[in-house]
Image (tube, rainbow, N blue to C red; front, side, top):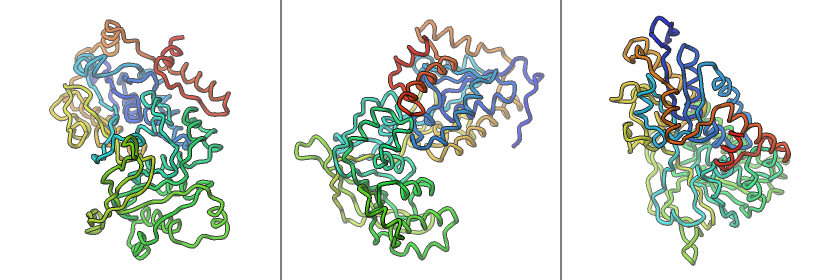
Length: 467
């Protein structure tokens, strides 16, 4: 549905909308709303904006981070303001935001981890991909992670893009990484890493692998590495190619080429020189992380061997009763992020880990909306979040146009919230304050030949912002 632009005669005052979360969902929602006469305030718990674009996108994918330029234009729009260092649910409640604004959009993403739910998950050497990614990308809460990379073999559970990002970071030559915005402490640790082999484990088969062809191609072409896969896991796959949709067909062809085709002379030479290896392992599900003799850290992982039942979209993995032990000192679980409840006043579906909603309207709560992962679950790429957030913004504007969202009363907006925060000793970080942090990080990066050197400490961020 195309929503006509709001005209000033539709309301006695400019509608004031508050967005909770300064990541892609928040900025894309704001981008759509500021095109009409809506005042938008973005509240973010960290002093720095951009969420997973800053803390989730792999350091060697700078082209994906170019969307920051678009977000910056939105933040500098006359009808948009950024308020960092504000923890909604703690510094200010959602109900207080609802008092101050005509509408509140929750776009705070997915900060939680899905757990494996197996014995040994809490051993040293076992990490969630979310925390590992946060460590090398400079998320303040993960700066003390210090993963032990002294083992030869790492096992990654999950076969999506994040799993391949982690595999690539573990195996990439340091000469490539040192030109990115990876944090210096992660670069130093990876330079000393003993990891030479990475297994990327999934519970279903090659036809269900969840990564994109771009990510797989990067693994195949990664300098200094060779693929190591079990040919038996690809039996019968080539015969299915004709019936596959084009994207899945191309992905499977590349997978087959890496796994079982005889390499050409140049590729054979590359593989013979390679000192590091990677490979997918299919039809495997974690049963237990096996401990070292002192019972302190991971020494291996026990996997159930699966078979597939059904076909097409309905295919499912079923245990065969066989098990397999893999020796490894590093286990990284990349089985998904999950959203967490933000405030008791906001409905939350704990089973699906989302805010229950209809087209972005939070159920049974007038004036409350959601966008991004907290709306639909942690799936898709940044473009998926863009479309989803635009949809929520259109829903909100539609409600204003129909009169189901009352914008006739004057609301204090950020002035009312600022007064509350001042009483509580909370000092928000503006977008111009962030630009001071940005400038200092860029300066520090230049001295090391990097795009930036991220600050890892919130206190230091605030000090620079207020200088």
